[in-house]
Length: 178
Image 1 (cartoon, helix red, strand yellow):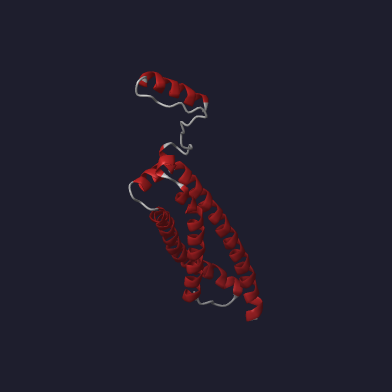
Image 2 (cartoon, helix red, strand yellow):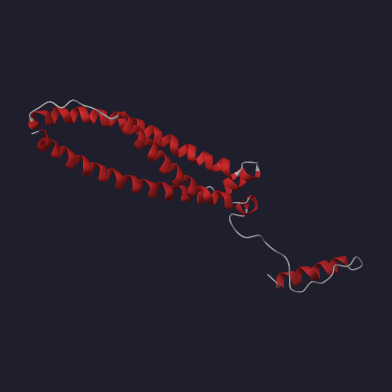
């Protein structure tokens, strides 16, 4: 009798685990998109931080800390909520099954799953923040445009005797090369 009544629990649990895995994959995609958008939006600010002495590694750790803190808080709330939901479901299904099921949560398994989720999330965040390493302060301040170059194909010398004329001529010829 225990195997037959436990079959329904196993099937429902398997379906819920499958849904949780799909939701986790969706979460990783959303986090990756969010980080990419955030880096693009804060491109100029990140370049300013780098010019002030923040290394790419430190900026990436800030993103990692931000997302991991939110994830750990969400896990704690989720674990407490899952336990309360389990207690409610046991009260509802005890009359249907015909025997009392004692609530047992495998804490070690829950911690292993939580750590695995955190590790996969950390790797995803670290990969997605790799774009920060490519930001240079000069490029960020010019909002991602390439450096402006004033070299021309025609290089006329600047002479001391006719300084204003030679500078004007050089300015005109450098504009031709742009």
